[in-house]
Length: 269
Image 1 (tube, rainbow, N blue to C red):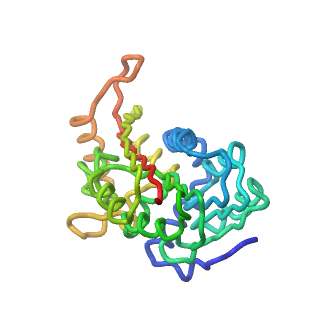
Image 2: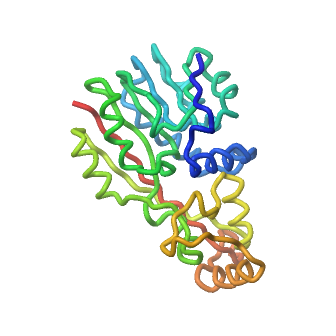
């Protein structure tokens, strides 16, 4: 069964996010860190047998495929922002209910035994609200399991462009979980420094994985729209090499892009 919310009902920011990910046709080929995160989340699911699983922000189905292969559930509810992914997700889990829409505003209530989300919560307008929402959707003893990213994520881009999503820090997440009544709380961080041949390759990687410095997706301390210019790109390249030059495993010059992942597991008493 499919439950649809038309993009016209999305905020302007969410419409832009949906467009960016809908056009990231090579996402799975380039989202290697995201795939590692999915494997890590899978390994931290407490029970193979579930009553009802809610996946939030399924995207291209990286996490959904792992769930379908390794978890048994009486009921599946798969949420995704981009309607373009509907057929893909339904093919992965033919018995699932597919809920297309903004997880922050649509009705995903139920009594789920597992709520899981991979690489999606950082796109919420109010990421911390995901915790309180999930507490209302979980049955007693149910597990909340998700990842987001820390303020160090893409630190090179933030430093050079003053652009980037706002990521709550680990203490803010801990407080939100406690305030929502969760127990057995576990938070962990992992840092990945990905090497690229040059700064332009970094920007290409971000575009191919649906992430860009488009103003409607990011927040700037100056609140001014961000636009690349030829001179700006040249300065970006020079500054990236000056401040973030490194060497890859072969000893060749490169620049790094930092991913810092925060994973959260908690249970509703």
